[in-house]
Amino acid sequence: QVQLVESGGGLVQAGGSLRLSCAASGRAFSSYAMGWFRQAPGKERVFVGAISWSGRTTNYADSVKGRFTISRDNAKNTVYLQMNSLKPEDTAVYYCAADPTGVLGLGFASEYHYWGQGTRVTVSS
Image (tube, rainbow, N blue to C red; front, side, top):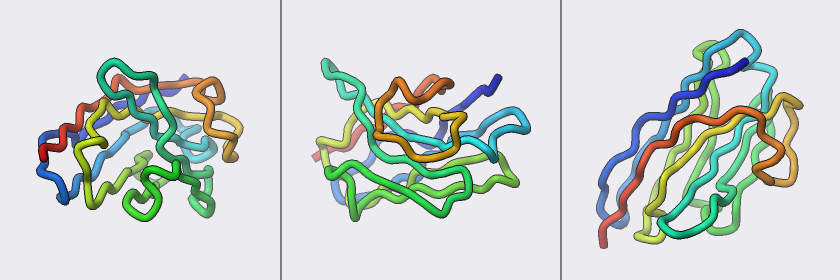
């Protein structure tokens, strides 16, 4: 069992930056692939990006490529989402999730077994 807790959300102006953190419990964290998803008001939860268990491989949704970066520190059981050049359309609740296979999948929510409670990001124009 893995418990995930996101932090770092808040209100930021367009063009600004935020770094989200996701702290995980459990010794198996370093073997999991980790993903970030977001859900805007009135919309479905969508894939933002993911990182493999080793941190060597990442992938991103087209909407955030070049602006968002995912990294992880397995010694700290933490995964990060660095968000730069934020836009109002990035406003959403951001969730981290854990995939026990450890490798990157296709970005479907069903690939992830464990989820955090989410942290809200609001980007003002």
